[in-house]
Length: 498
Image 1 (cartoon, rainbow, N blue to C red):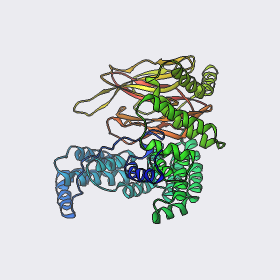
Image 2: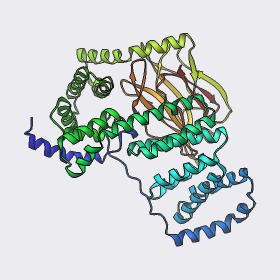
Image 3: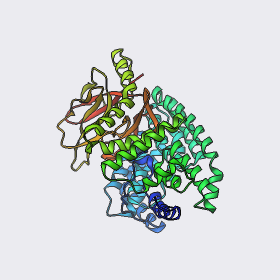
Image 4: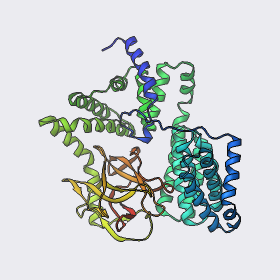
C-alpha cells in the first residue's frame, strides 16, 4: 500500500486523464473508458463568406425556392438542400449555409427528421456548439410538428437532447425538454412512448433532488479541488445516482477513507491479468453484499459483473465455475418472467420503424429468452452505408440461441453483444427510406427486468440519414424482433414482455 501522500499524488495525476475520457452515458456505466477519437472539424465561415454562399445558392435554387409554396414542396426542397450540403464537402461556406437553409425550411413545415439531421451534419463538419441550436430548433418544432409521425420524431429528438442536458446537470433545460417530449408523445398517440416519457419526467425529479444535495459540495470543490468530504459526496452522486463511473471513481479515490475508496484507487490502474480482474470483481461483489441500500447494491454488483465478464474468458476450473454460477444467479429471476410471458403470450410490440415493404418476419425463441445481441450485415456504395440484414442473438436458461438472418445476404458482418449481466434494452435507428443505421442500448439485468439507470450505448453502426427513432427503453425484457425484409432490412420492431 502506498503512503497516503503518494497515493493522493497518483490519483491527482490520473484524475486529469480520467475526467478527459468520454462520458459513461456514451459507452458503459460500469466500463473503464477508452481513449477518445477527435474528428477533424472546420471553423464556421465568417459572415461575408456566408453571404456570398447564400447569394450563389439563391442563384442556383431561386426558381425552386420561389415555387415552393406548399408544405410538401418546402419539405422536398429542404431535403434537396440538405443532400446538396452533404455533397458539398469541398465548399465549406456553401455547405454551412445549405444546412442552415434546410433546417429553417424543415422547421417551418414541422419536419423534425430533416431539421435535426441538418444540425447533425453541421456538427460533423464544423466546430460549433450545437446545444443552443438544438434547443432553439426543438422549441420551434414544438409549434409546427403536429401530425403523429412528426410528433413521434420530435419526442425522440427531445429524448436525445434530454440525455445531454442531464449529463450536464442542467435541470432547467431538462424539465423544459420533458414537457415538450411528453406533449409530443401525446400528439404522436404512441402508448409505449407516452409511458416512457411519464417515467422519465419522474426520474428527472429524483435526479434533481439528489443533485440539490451535492450543490454545496460542488462549490467546495471549485475552491478546494482535493477536499475529501466534497469529493466523496459528488463521487457518490455521480456513481450511484447517475451511473457515471468515469468521473465518479476518481473523486471517490480522492475522498474519505472507506472500502469504496480503496477499490476506486485500484481502478485508477486496473488489473490486466485474469487473476487480478477476478479479485477485483470479488471485492466489488463483497462490497455490494455489505450494502443495505438496494440501488447502491445494484450499482456495485453491476461493477462486479463487468470485471467478472472481463476475467471469464481466461479462467478455468473452479474459478470459472464460480463466476458462471454467479452470473446465472443474477439472470435467473428475469428468465422466469420471460418464459412465463412467452408461454402465456403476454407480449407486445414496440412501434415499427421503416417503410412498409418487404416480407414480414417474427423471430423469438419458443422457450423464452432475452435478446442480448445482433449480427448486423451492412451494404454500401454511392448511396452510403445501410443495414442489409440482421440476426438476433438470445440468451436462454440453457445458453445462447441464434435467431435467423433477415435481409438479403449479410455482406460485411458486425457482431454486437451485451457484456455479462446485461441485455439489450432498446435501439436507436435512422430509417428515412430503409434501415440506414442503428445503435444498441444495453441495460443491466436486475430482478425481473432491466435497470434503465445502469445502461450503456454502443457505437453508431451504418449510415446517418434521417433522424433518430427509439424503440424500447422502458426496462421491460426484450424477447424477440419483428419486421419486413427483401434484399435489405426494411422495417424493424422489438417484442417485449408486458
